[in-house]
Length: 318
Ligand SMILES: Cc1cc2nc3c(=O)[nH]c(=O)nc-3n(C[C@H](O)[C@H](O)[C@H](O)COP(=O)(O)O)c2cc1C
Image 1 (cartoon, rainbow, N blue to C red):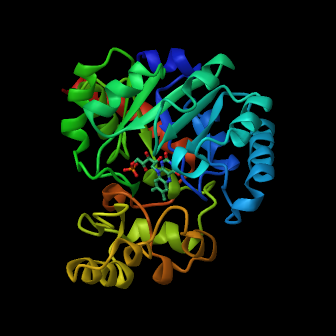
Image 2 (cartoon, rainbow, N blue to C red; image 1 turned 90 degrees about the vertical axis):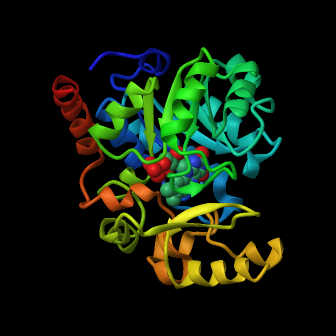
Image 3 (cartoon, protein in one colour; image 1 turned 30 degrees about the vertical axis):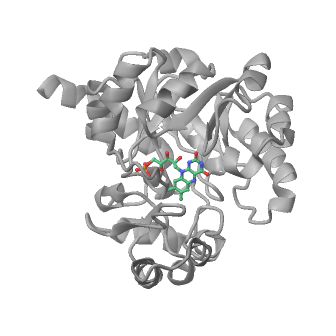
């Protein structure tokens, strides 16, 4: 597999990034991805639903990952959650983290601070306008995420297939494709569209190293092509598995419920009952449409290796 600018930027062998996932993206998962040649990402609240303990949790997750790999790994920050507060960012810098993925907010807030401290910044975008804005604010790469993806989605609802080539044409920094990618076919397609790497979330939840409850992983494995739905349109759109909960939310939405009422939708920040206790009925399972393609729980390293091996075969067969 040829090296792309994303490999050079991050000092990794293969341009495969494990997405930050609130509560879920733990040190064991991140280090397994990094050991396989990709870039693992830690979420500050991995395994810790109490936001009051997030600072010590982040430090201990970074130290644990460091004990499990000597390869680069990164940290994800949701700007919506941290706002202007740099205390978590400072912990990542102090602990020697060299790459950060950021989203859900303006790249103007923290990019130059991170870059002054030698940290590579990748910013999640879901439209050409936001990609251009991120480039203007000095980010090193954009992660262009289509609305197939699990978690919070953009109201613009652009699919990965139409978003990537338009973002690639609009910016000169490297573009990482996210949303709906789970195997070598998706990886090859993303590169064909002009991306120089991929970011995957849902695929990495169904792995041995991921901290999510077994019920959560099993629900992803059991999902079919039509199993996911977006709820929270008009407030915070989230993609997850269809359930009794999402049906209630949709009924409330159809009946014109207020956005306050709709804040009861499952969200990556409030999903601890599902992620930790396996109560997938009460909380719902947040994941991408690609869940329908995932038919087993494997090791995170095998996810990376199967993409690397499959890619050459696919390209040779085109
Ligand atoms: C359960 C879940 C939680 C997520 N939480 C975050 C998050 O905290 N920050 C973030 O930038 N992206 C988050 N994402 C998005 C992922 O990092 C990744 O971009 C996305 O999952 C890619 O789409 P895929 O699920 O189709 O692979 C989350 C995704 C999932 C499935």
